[in-house]
Each structure stands twice: as structure tokens, then as C-alpha cells.
Image (cartoon, rainbow, N blue to C red; front, side, top):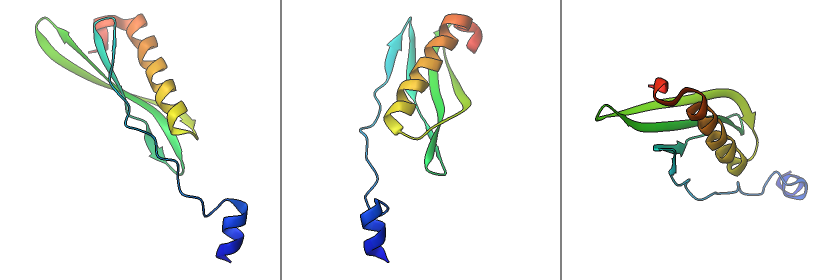
Length: 92
């Protein structure tokens, strides 16, 4: 039966992606942190910034699910940028 999985692609190893690098955006730092759930990835990112001299952090988690880790990282960054553009320091 394992030969059948190999034939149909079920036995192929999962694609490993390099660890996402933090991104600086408009004075904030974004680290994509997609959450693996059932073979898919939920959009998630940590947004860090400094407000009134104090380091702050916010974890963004969305309901959106994406199958590819690299695409989930990109989508997580995009949603974090959108949140920064809309809310600025009010994120924290």
C-alpha cells in the first residue's frame, strides 16, 4: 500500500521553508508566524513597536487558511501591514 501513496504523492516529504525573517515597516517590526492546522496554515503575525518609550507587541490571528507555508507567510505580512496602515499605535 505504501507504493500507492508514493505513486499518488502521499509519501512525499513536506516542503520545508526557511524561517521567515522579521520585516521593518513604518517603524514597526513584523514577524510572520502562520499557525499550522490540519495541513493548512492560519494567517498570523507578531507586530512589535515602541510607544512612548515602551516596547509593545501584538499578535494578529486571522481566520484565513492557506495551504502553502510561503504563501501564508506573505499573506501574514500583508495583513500586518494593512493593520499598521489602518490603526498605527492603536494596535497596542
